[in-house]
Amino acid sequence: MTSLDAVTAWIQNYRSAWESNDPEEIGNLFAEDAAYFTEPFAKPWLGREKIVKKWLKNQDEPGTTTFEWHPLIVTEDLAIIEATTRYPKKAYSNLWVLRLDISGQARQFTEWWMRHPS
Image (cartoon, rainbow, N blue to C red):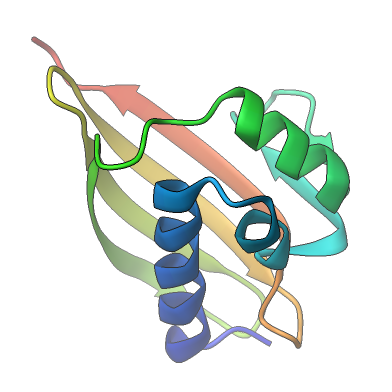
């Protein structure tokens, strides 16, 4: 079940994992059989173990990003988040589709990211 409080907690935990790159923190975000889509039509990373492995392979250096977000839609089944990620020399607009299970872990996560013009 998804609620704004659950979404907010999940995103706070996501940011903490993003900054720490700690495998346990990353893994705690996702259900054992979760699907992580890095793009809507990309082959998903399936399962917590693979998500952690792929995340760490593609990690950002801690302290190199800022992240601002707000919810567009939060229902019992899903949340749609609009966000901006800023790096020192580039920025991205993000759209996330997040489906949480009853324990607050993501069972499905899909991200769209678009680089801002220079």
